[in-house]
Length: 85
Image (tube, rainbow, N blue to C red):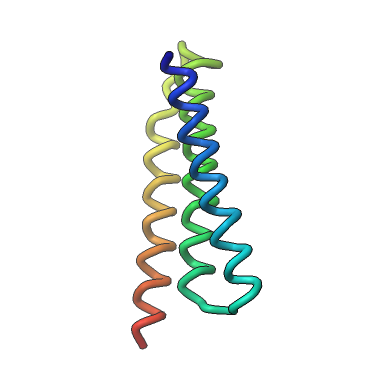
């Protein structure tokens, strides 16, 4: 059941990224770009979670996952700050 939930989270984040970047392509609104980029990195993070928990259960990839999640939130924060100027 856990593998299904992990996969569903990765699929949902990927779908959000695709929709946001497609909307950015049509409107060129910068916040859509930064949000889409955030979800691209979150998708990578979710795929790494699947690899950590299911593919390589003996390895601990949590530090790498946390670093990627921090980078994703940093991208979104940068986009929000640059949009407010």
